[in-house]
Length: 151
Image (cartoon, rainbow, N blue to C red; front, side, top):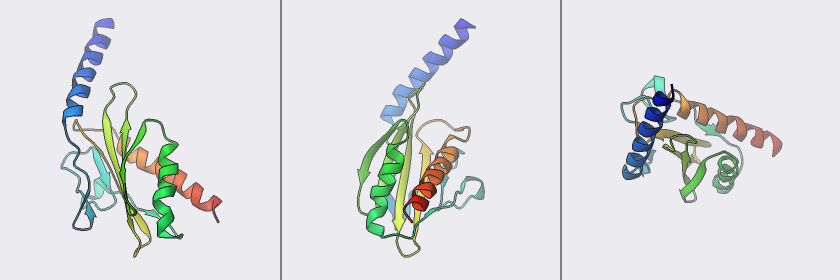
């Protein structure tokens, strides 16, 4: 049993060190978030594969407040580090506790549609065991609670 745990920890640290070298595929291209890869470790509100699609966040306030409100929501979550932001875009890294894997979470404000498109993707690996979907749904839950308190 101890040998198995040591092997898992060694494997995790090797993958973690590799993840630092892998650059994230993030950003906005042609007014859209970067598409998810073919692997099932990414969800996006702009995805074409229904299995990996999530709904965007909605809002009814001023677009100028959205990024600030999102920073409050993700700032309350464990392992979050804000990487970059603009008036209509936010990139956040989430680091896992045990293996220190990094997932990239992005938000893009679409003021015409009054939605915030979201994307959450693992940098390494193939499966994410639903981590990215659960993270976006937790963000959605906190976002909706914050919206209802501001009314």
